[in-house]
Amino acid sequence: MDAKVLRRQKIRYNIRKKISGVAAKPRLSVFRSNADIYAQLIDDVAGKTLASASSNDKDIKAQKANKTEKSKLVGSAIARKAQELGITAVVFDRGGYLYHGRVKAIADGAREGGLQF
Image 1 (cartoon, rainbow, N blue to C red):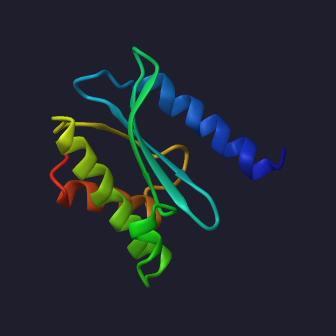
Image 2 (cartoon, helix red, strand yellow):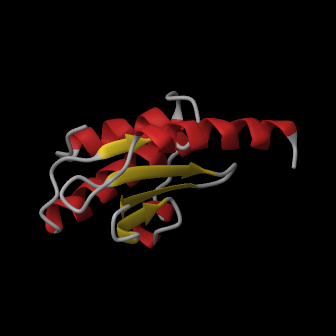
């Protein structure tokens, strides 16, 4: 593996030692690839993904927007799915990425959608 990936992996493990999601307050996990961005609501106790959203979803992919704007749409989509499940509070897991740019855009979109973290 390349040094950048290993560094992010170490950061991820340190973050995961500190935070955990339960059914009432799941973990909002973010994965960022070069082209797309993904968000999941995870219940770590049961080991289940409760909801997910990504920039590959049809309604988001159809938008003519840059990657940061699409990330904000992913954030609001995951917030909408959380509201349908009756979830209002989450624990944000930036997945080893800096809280900046697309990762921050997901967080902002989720907050505007009504999630608290």
